[in-house]
Image 1 (cartoon, rainbow, N blue to C red):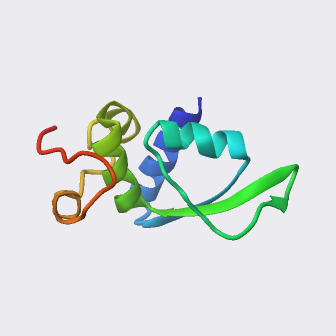
Image 2 (spheres, helix red, strand yellow):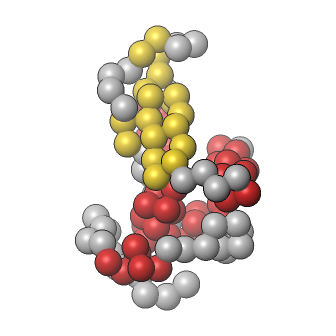
Image 3 (tube, helix red, strand yellow):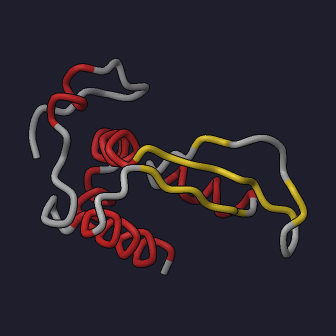
Length: 105
């Protein structure tokens, strides 16, 4: 369900030329996304917002490049194999990412 919602966010962001996203997530959701190769940056401390939530944001190109590197299966699902948000190949090849480099997909 969470990946489906994120796929919809990616599609809407592409349609409206949105480059960054913000979210309020609880800690288990942040961890689940990280296990799926989807890494948001924390924006300050946890706050009370319908329970404790972490404000977070991501630059979509960087988020999706890292997802492609760490979990190409998840990247393919949330971008519909790049149809909704094509991979930024120069960014993918130019940056020292935390995980292995990928040259195909």
